[in-house]
Image (cartoon, rainbow, N blue to C red):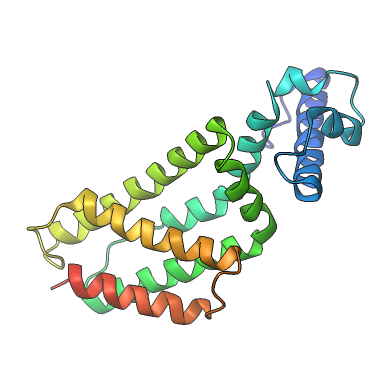
Length: 204
């Protein structure tokens, strides 16, 4: 059954209005940048009534974090893939592919990722949202490391959370370098290089 089939006409209209606001917000943020974008501009582009946007989002920061969550969905799917390698080689192949996909998805959303970078520098709400996103990735990585430690593939005498944080922060920094045009390296080369470094230190 479609998730919206049981909703009333008013509820469906509310969902559509919210979607319209998000679509308009994305356009305005990309066109104006985070700091110059306003809720009035978003409301006008969405063709909603005066002040309607505030019924759905308290401010532009909250609307922006909803857009961030939409962008992260595909990245979460990559991070949440089952990870039960039987050999170091299997682990290496899966980690490299996850790393490549993470960078590729960021590049596919390059303009919005640039807007996120701008927004985290000026908005406490957006910065906190990004920290929550970081924590979700780090938690998933920690789970994967624990799994391979228990299976005997990885070294046990390491701080699992610190390793997970270090691995994520390495990926994150290279992602920002790519989307901000600070580096132009091929993502396949990046994924292979840092996966070599990571698995070489963690796996037996």
